[in-house]
Length: 348
Ligand code: MRU
Image (tube, rainbow, N blue to C red; front, side):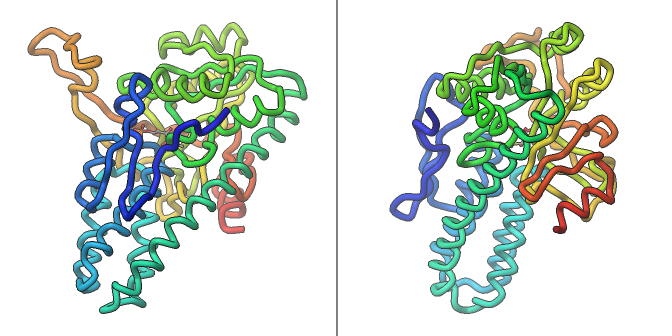
C-alpha cells in the first residue's frame, strides 16, 4: 500500500515536509513558513530528490509571495535566485524557480493578486508530477516486456527515486512499484547508497511499505551481483540530463553503469522532462555538488574515521550516455541515447 504518509503537504498556508533525515526511524514533519526555511530544508536534505526539490521550491516562492505582497519584481527575482542556490545539481530547482520568475512579470506591483495564482500553480504541479510518474512507469513496464520478456524480474535501483523524491509515485522506483502492481517483480535490489544511505533508509522504507520483496546490497557487491546475473535490469533517476544524454545522478551511478555494460545488463534512466538541461551539451558542463566530509566520516552521529582523517564527498557523478540503454521521460523512451533522439522526444 502506498502513501501511508505524504512526503509533503500544504495546509493552512504552511508547508509540512516529512523529515527525510529521520526516516525510517521517525515519521515527523518540519513546518516551513518562509523562503529562508525552505532554502534550509532543501540544503539540509529534510527534503531531497530532484523532482521534489523542484516542487518544494515552488512552495518556497509561494511563501515568499505570501509574506512579501508589497514587494517589487526585482526583490522577487533576488529571492528566487537565493532559493536557487540551495542545491546546484538538480536542474528541477532552477527550472521551477525560473518559471515562477517568468509568471511574476505579469503581476509586477500586484503580488496580492499573484498569491492565489501561484498557490493554484503549485497544486496543479502535483497533478503534473502524478501523471508524469504514471506515464513513465507504464513506459518502463512496456520496455521491460520487450527487452526481458513477460515473466517476473529482478530489478535494481540506486539512491531513492520513489514518492519521497518525486511526489505521488516515483520515477525509477515508480517503475519497480508499477511492475510489482502487475505481479512482475521477483525481487528488487536497492543499493545502500553511501554515504547518505538513501537506499537503506528511504528506498527500503518505501519498498517495505508496499510489500515489495527486496534485498539491500552494499555498493561493493554490485559487480558480483551483476556477474551472477541476479539482476535483469537497472533503473536510476536523474538530477540533470544534458543534450547528449550524459546524466548526473547520485554518486555511484556511473560505476554501476560501467559494471552493467560489462555484464550486459540493461541500465535505464527514468526522469521527468523538468530534469533535462538542454542548454548544456555534455556532462562536463554539469556542476556537481560537493557535500560536507562529515557525511562520510560519521555515521548516525558517530565518528567512524580516525581523528584527523579527511574525506572527499561529491554528491553526484556523471554517467556517460553510451552506458545508458534508454532514458524514459513522460513523453516517451529515448533509445538509443543520442542528441537527435533526445531532442525529438523531449521537444515533442
Ligand atoms: O542527494 P539526493 O538524495 O537529493 O539525490 C537524489 C538522487 O540522486 C536521485 O536519484 C535523483 O534526484 C532522482 S530523484 C527521482
